[in-house]
Length: 432
Ligand code: AMP
Image 1 (tube, rainbow, N blue to C red):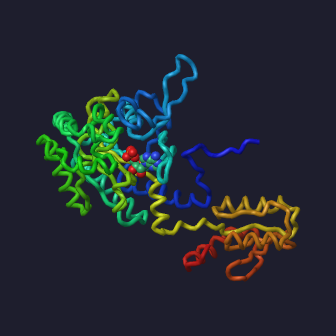
Image 2 (image 1 turned 90 degrees about the vertical axis):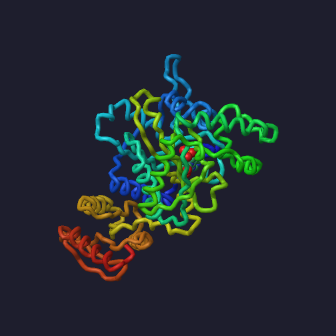
C-alpha cells in the first residue's frame, strides 16, 4: 500500500487545533456584523482570465503561483483556483448588478486560497483568508474605516504588537511617470541587481521596491519615492486617509517601499505586520484601493478598497506569543447505562437531551458501566446520566461528576434539571 499524505504545502487542521480557528472565524463574523459588512461566498475557482486580467499577468501570483485546472474538454473554459478573493468578489459585484444597491457594498468572505508557492513556515499552498471589501466608495474615510477594522480584529484576537504599514501608490494619472523614473533610476544598477530583480526591471519595476533581498536595500534606499511624485488628487487623498486614521487613533508607519504584488491597486496600500517582522515578507494581512478593477472586469468605473487577513499566520503568531487556545468544549452530560447492551435506551435519552438543546453524548459501545463513567469524567462532562433499574419507573440517576453527588430524576424532568444545574454551574465559574 502506498503511504498517502496531504499534498505538499497543505495540511490538515486537527480537532486539537480547530478550536482556535473556530474562535477566529466567529470573531471575524462578529466584527463584520458590527461594522455592517455582509457575507458573500464566491466559488473557489473562477475563469482564469479573471485572475490574469484582474491581478495582472506580470505578477508572481499569476505567472508562477496560479493553480490552473486542466481543461476537461477542448471547449472547456479555462479555470484556476482562486489565489486571492478580490477578483472573484468584484466579478460577482459586476455580474449581480450590485452597483444598483446602496453604495458602498460592504462584503466579507472567509475561506481557502491557493497559491503554487514554495512551501515554508507561514507559507502554504492552501491558506485561509478573512477578506473585507468595500466597493463603491472612493474614500478617504472608508480607507481608514477598513484599516481600523483590521487593527480592531487583531486586538480582539489577542495579538499584541501589530503594526500598520501605509503607503499610497498613486493612480493612472501619476504612476506611469513615476514608474518610468524608477526604471531610469534602476537601469544604471542593472548589473548589480540579483537575477530575479533584473527580470522584474523590464516587466514590473515597482516590484523591485518590495524586494526582500538584502542586496537591494542600499539601492532601494536612494530610489525616488512614489509619495514624492503623487499628483495633487492622490496627495490630497493620502493626506486625508492619514488624517482619518489619526482621528480614530489608529497608529501606522509610512512605508514608501510598500507597493503590493498585485497590479490592480491604486492609491492606498497597506499591510499589517508583527513589529520587527517586516523584513521577512511575513505580512499578517495586506490590501489596498483598487479603483480600476471593477471596470477592468467589465463593470462601470467604480472605486473599491479591501484587504485580506491571513488566518494561518495569525494562528502561528498567536501560538508563538503563548495566547492560550480555547479549551475544547466538554459536554454537559454523558448518558451511560448499567446494561451495556441496551444501546437503544441510551440513544433515546441522548436524543431527547439534544432536542432540548443540551450538549451531550452517549456511550454507544458495550463496555461496562465503570468504564463508561471513567470516559465521561475524562471528557470533562458535568453530569453522567445513568440508566439503571429506575428506568422501569421512568427515572434515571443523575450524577454530578464535579460535585460527586447523585439523585434520581424523572426522565420527563431530566433536560430541565440538567439545564438549570448546568447554567448555575457555569455562572459559578465551573469548568464545564
Ligand atoms: P497577499 O494578497 O499576498 O497580500 O496576502 C494577504 C495575506 O494572506 C498575507 O498577508 C498573508 O497573511 C496571507 N497569505 C498570502 N499568501 C500566503 C501563503 N502562501 N500562505 C499563508 N498565508 C498567506
